[in-house]
Length: 454
Image 1 (spheres, rainbow, N blue to C red):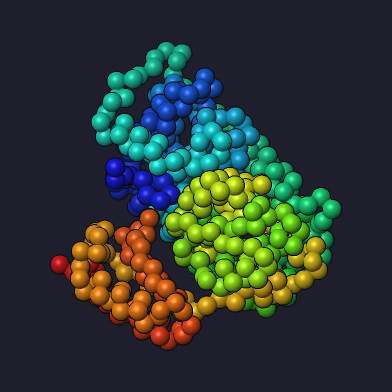
Image 2: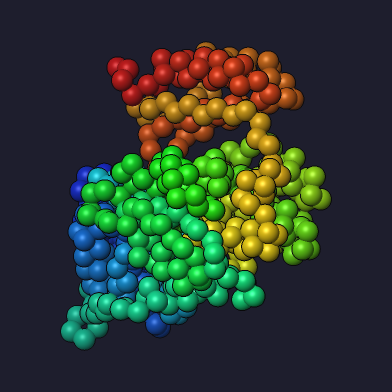
């Protein structure tokens, strides 16, 4: 069945416009509460959010829906997405809910769910929630009197998460003498992230720690690594760390201000774990978007790369299916299953800093383990998600590019899971060649499916 509300990472859209309305949020709250009551007697759901203005509206609607089904809501306020995953399991709650649109601008918002074990809900449960909402099968379920749920605020939630993160850093190491530039994107990590690094001994220059409800991801965070690059050079820092709005992803810059993306971080971490013989099955899970240079780097270290669909939830599913411990995305989602059930930007930064301290190498030295092949990504905004295989001219353009690149490159065309975009990615030995081919494909697709076409 095709989903009507959920994308690759929950429900997302412009706040106060379908599907991101208070009405839908309340129904989502009722449906997740119903699922929880099927399996347990605890009846508690953790709710966290980022710093968007619309978070208040969505939060209250979710609480209303959850409590109306006789389930209690535990409110933790602005905290990173991975903090909600951790707290859901730590507090033995039935589920966790995050109100965030991640890296999107403030006018957007989203809702994503974690099961009681801290992992994101599988597709089949999301489909069940949608079926309950659209069939209205639970509309008549209305607990009354003392069976109505309550809402509680958990005041020590941030402290619990900070302690958890510090425990993920090797006890024999510290960050004394390390100068860090940290950009929190005016988002969910604006309080906890600086505290973690400072408490471990680092000197922290904090950016993006003044959220006002409308400035999340605005010219800051992981989408704008040039900001920390300038600050690293200005302050002569050892590393720059840029989080996104809900802090489940991270992008780095080295001591010279050069960007270090998720593929390089996977290569660094995999190589280190292979050297220490702690990487299960000598395998890393990456998505189809990751650069082929990652395969070469991990292979040179004696390991291999397994590919999954795009989206950190699919990375995690492949990791759990294969018994792997390290996975991630080029965009900066990194998953260390030994420590966390989902992507965690702060945790990832701590793992990288631990490698730097243990090896006594700079980030630029470590990043040299991988050389990226030229890659280009073009986004085409579309009217609707149609099967591109039904258009012969699009198929011909893709086939021609694949034939020209041969075994020295690849073509990947996929729809975004969160926006009305068709993503065109080409990889090869020659940047000019793949750019020209990508532009030809994009022009053909835009002519057929472009949003500004009639």
